[in-house]
Picture 1 (cartoon, rainbow, N blue to C red):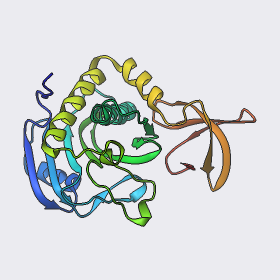
Picture 2 (picture 1 turned 135 degrees about the vertical axis):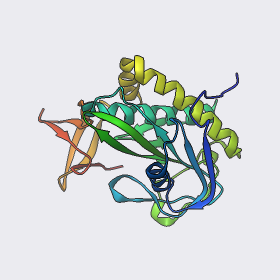
Picture 3 (picture 1 turned 90 degrees about the vertical axis):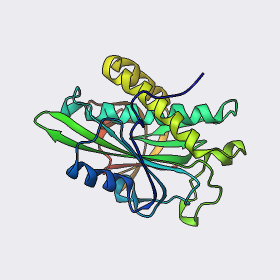
Length: 254
């Protein structure tokens, strides 16, 4: 089966080196109107950004580092997290496709990091621009460790697809496949939201499992029971106390 997206990645800008593909795409949008699905790809990214203000580290020429332009004007502002779910699922679908018959576990670590056998294999940074009560456009930054085999000592919990399968992958082919899975999930976001919601929970790391968390600097034992509409994590403690947490309040202790 040919994996070819219709509009995502149809307009593509390929750079040798850039500080941040998200920042580059944002600056382009100030100057010109770009079609939905525009992709900015870099073989080397010097200042990629992640959640909580962290920096995304990637060996040049070994991984996928790109940003996509989407225009989900059909989403209300209070439904922004549905977009985050969709992107996380699309990246998960793509990684599972690469793994093929390798029995590795792909999970989404809330809100949208992708873990392979409990090690981080991909990160996502979504930056939305709002107009009135709608999302005018979204810049979707995606970093996926594909062929990198060695990570710095600060990234002890990082891994790559190649580390799991032992195979080396063609990055151009990988990007085309990623666009295909992204477009497939984006269509679901428009018309089959319940599938997105259910699949996200089914892929969520530690969903309905007891685990340790750092909540407002206190270590607690709790389990994830759901996600509220705005994307907050719903946790239940052993004493049945329930918390709704945003990303600055809670951290999973792996």
